[in-house]
Image (cartoon, rainbow, N blue to C red; front, top):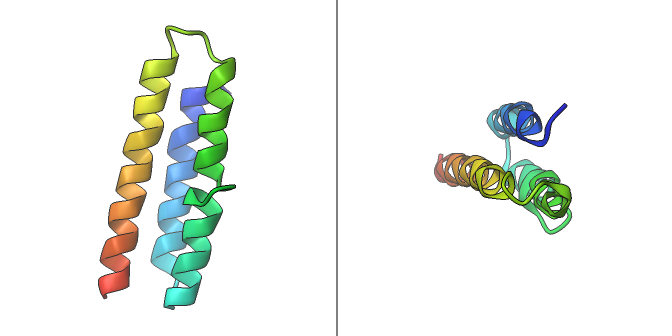
Length: 80
């Protein structure tokens, strides 16, 4: 599976986990799992060094867009 192909399934899993979280503590657990210092998206960003130089901008943009969508969803869920 290519680097870019990993992003969408990971984002979908994170969105499902955010929707399933039924408390602020569980929302925070999901945040840490996917967006934290040792989270899955942070891990993807760390793998970018192994990509071809010309592939890095598109890959970085895709990861950052996914992270932004997750952050927005997380903020919306916290306000509910």
